[in-house]
Structure formats: C-alpha cells, structure tokens
Image 1 (cartoon, rainbow, N blue to C red):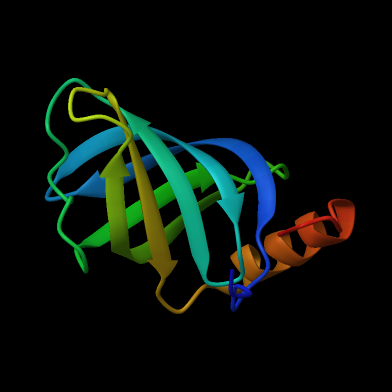
Image 2: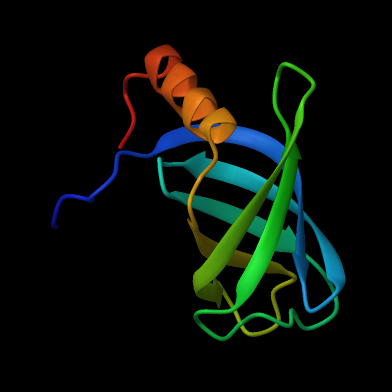
Length: 114
C-alpha cells in the first residue's frame, strides 16, 4: 500500500453538501489539509457521482463559526448498488485559513492520523 500524500484525521462532523442547487445532509468521517471523506445518506440518486463535480461543503467549527468550502468531488461509491449511503472524496479548492487552522488543531489532538 502506498503512503497517502496528506495525513487524515478521523472526525465525526455533521455537514451539508450542495451540488447542482440540491442540498444533502452529510457526515464528515476524516479530514486532511486539502481533502475530506464524507458520507451521504439519501434515498434519491446523488447528482455528483461523476468525478470532478464542483460542490460546496458547509459545516460548523467547534468555535461555532460556520465554514463554507468550495470543493471538487474526486470520487464516489456505494458499498452495494442498493445502498442508501454514498461515500465521497472531496478535494478542497484553496482552503481558507479558518479551515487550515481547524485541521492543524485537530491533527494535534489526534496525532494517530492515517
């Protein structure tokens, strides 16, 4: 197995993903400096299964501040074809300082990132 370019930090954060003017509730399961792995539970087909779709990811930092990240969907898959959970990998385009500071703080709390 090859090493990842960026270390991941496990988290459990509620979020919202907006794609093609449709909002999906999501849970962020891990973060890196330039990427996020999230899960979406939906009964409807997700409209960004194609790679390279631009999306917005919105979530609240522990400080209470809401952060809105402009992202690009890099991959998406379901464990089974009739699963209601879609796993997605998101690349953060030009992460703002607030997000970078949050990631660094989380990395210090959870040094066992992968």
